[in-house]
Amino acid sequence: MIDNKALTILKVTLDKTINKELHWEASEGGGEIFINKTASGYELRLYPNTDYDEEPRGEGPPSLTLYDATGHLVMDITFKMEGVLADDLENLYSAARRAAQNIDEKLDEILFDLTKDPDNPF
Image (cartoon, rainbow, N blue to C red; front, side, top):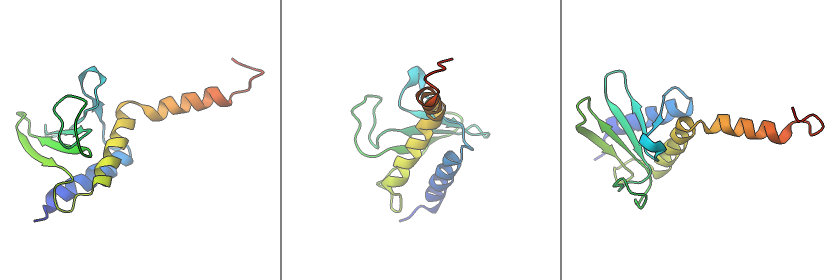
C-alpha cells in the first residue's frame, strides 16, 4: 500500500532542501547523519543507509526517519516503501550533506583560489 503522506513528506523535504529552505545540521562529531528540527518540535534524521546502526557499515540507500518531540519514532521512510525511489533518498542525502557541511561555500573558496590572478596572489 502506498503511504501518500510519507511520499509527500519526502517530496516536500527534498524540494525544500534543494531550494535551501531547510536547515540541516550534521550529527555530533560532524557525523554522516543529518538532522532538521521542525518548528513543531519534530526531528527529521537523514541516515546514509537504510539499515544503519551508528556504524559506517550500513547497507542500502539513505533513509529519512521522523521522530516526535519526545524522541519517539514516528516513521521510517526508506526505499522499501512502495512508491519511494532510492534516487530521491540519494538526492535528499546529497543536498542535506552539502547544506550541513557548507560544501557550496567551500567549493566557491577553492574555485576562487584556483582562478585568481597568479601574478597577484593577494
